[in-house]
Length: 471
Ligand code: HEM
Ligand code: HEM
Image (cartoon, rainbow, N blue to C red; front, side):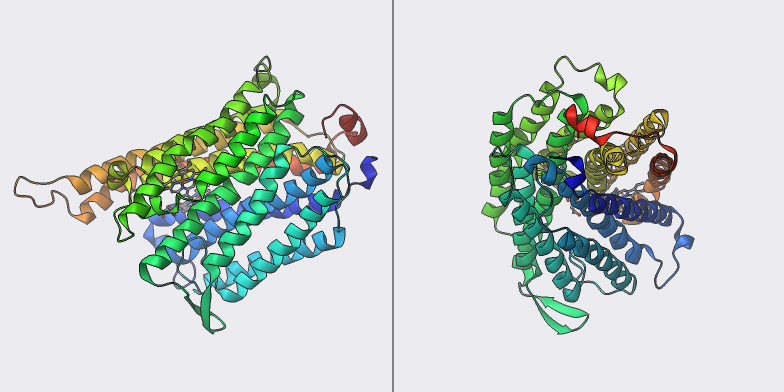
């Protein structure tokens, strides 16, 4: 099929918008890190840590994370199915509705409207918008798969379909609520049940938005970047089905030592530990695909991002199960250890894969070669160092915090007051903020490189890349 028949315009638009929301997310992340060390940077009522933090998390997961999912899935589905999109008009509608939803979310959160459920803070009218958005996206992807010209369904398509169905089920169940006004609703579930349903949603949002889609991208873009196929299709399929089976039981690991029934906690703990196997199935598949190709880590900047990304996924999926064990959870829960875990996943795994995917897409959708590979390498180091500083400072802070909270005098009283433990956090929070700034600098270099690519890049032949199997 000729390259001209594919719909790359929409991919281009989604790439651009996801980058914009990514910058907002990271910038607000940097601002809230400084607000934690300099309280004078809070400007009530709107620009306070409490209002900006959910804007950071939602812009990060839904603006940047989901924006990249839209961009990459709309590209990958056409390539793997060897057919143009089922409906380019529906995809256009999806683009503008996506931006409208993100803007509506940011404005209402700034104004203080919130359900107070983490990662599901938006009030019910925005939930309705999210459902319309996701249905539009899902229909287009599924219809394109149905009319495909390639019989074989590559693993990325399986992860994409899981994400489409998974997000829909989780979101609908967790959204059940009784509206009492345009901006206020009450959850359909009460007390412990509410918490249980919410964290079933919460952790599976990690599975269906922050794990399955980056895996779909990784499995697609790694072989396209190295020029050699993945090590084992069979292993990828086994890891896929076992990952889906095991994730759905793990939500209650967020609720260890709470009134949630003991057996539910134990079940979540056991399944979380079992999750190591399917997660590492994909990590091994990635590493083994590099057999004889390791020299590309030095020569090919795309491979560097992808392999570091999957390495952080591997580390994340060892650390996660450890945290899900009751005794370890008793130590680190509520401490800064947890944001460190999260940011190794979001800044390391999800964002590294997203940057690589965008670097791969830009020449193909704009027809321009990357402006500067040295700048791409520089960005790699900035975001790697920034993220490591971020995570290490808070891992250390978390252990220190946990140690101080647990310290007891011989008479059984607590050795430290809560305020004393907070004061100890300051140096680590400063270091975290500086790590965030370094990461932000990496994002600026990334954007500069892309803008210069579009403006001044040498011509790139999509036909020639496709002929070599690199489109
Ligand atoms: C085998 C896979 C994983 C397991 C078993 C796991 C386990 C856990 C556990 C037990 C917690 C709760 C910590 C606490 O509050 O005490 C947690 C938090 C979290 N994890 Fe993971 N994790 C895994 C992979 C990932 C991945 C790949 C990401 C992607 C970025 C991720 C993102 C998060 C987030 C966002 C939270 C914070 C939720 C909150 O706000 O409380 N996790 N994880
Ligand atoms: C320079 C980059 C970043 C900085 C400086 C930053 C900073 C922060 C800060 C200060 C918090 C609040 C932590 C707390 O409550 O103690 C936070 C939370 C969070 N951020 Fe980021 N962040 C960055 C990148 C990202 C990205 C790219 C994503 C998503 C793709 C993300 C997702 C989250 C999530 C899910 C939380 C909630 C953590 C929790 O519940 O403990 N962050 N971030």
